[in-house]
Image (cartoon, rainbow, N blue to C red):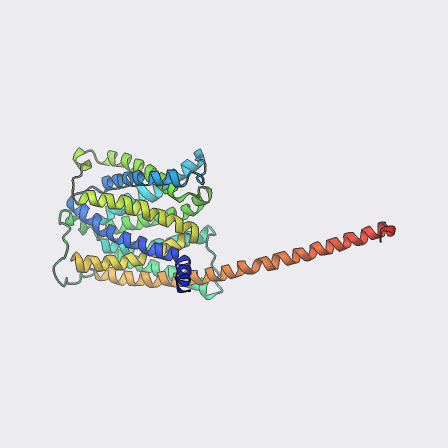
Length: 372
């Protein structure tokens, strides 16, 4: 009985568990990529190699496991995936990881929390989310979104003093490019721009999955096309051949981790959860990685933690979970209404059908009195 109960709970909360694991994966990505960039890894080259790795790893699984359910790829669908790859891979990630050079992993992780609010706004505009202003749930969604965006503005415009480190770093990630961190505003603006395009990417996924409901294959296509787009861009902006060479060091490990775990497994998890729960649900778990990154950066890496990031992060998380409360209660009511809907639709139609049969029988008996 207990085993059945645990299994039922795991089935019910499977999307939640998967998204928590995805955020843990993102947490380590922030730390590893910063170490690699400080070591001298070019962000554009990193993005290209990372998605080449993801394509090679996911291709066999996508080909064999989804042979029977994978739709035929038309030209229109290919162009849609091309735009999806541009928004989710080449354009967004190039801005995203460039901003990491100018800021810190803690601020970048905090900034990602705005994706949930931006995705919610777009979902409301496109009627993927319904907001009832006359209910507490609808007001919680609006208020949570507004508070979240206020927190982001705090993080972007106010850096504040840094907290004193409590000891030495347990792990050293290198000091190669720390000078880039001085341009805080430039990095913040790049991060905000990447969050906007990322939000559009999440919304577009929901539409694409309806026409191409094969998550592994879609993730493989996005990685392949995104790698090609990023390679073209990198060749244009980076002509030095030495930048494309990586050794058996942190650069290689960060590329493999980003390709296999983030662009591969985590992307598949997000696509599955988007189809199951919607794009807004997927973005609601970003605050978890914010907290984990802040703890790792401050206590393990001895990174400076700024007051502006702390204040803004707290505001963002408070607003985000207010939005989460409104959405979860809204989902519960929607399911309840859907369960009641068949009773209100079927029985009236059945009564009409019965009335129609009775009328037809009466008219027939009048026409044929000998048969009565």
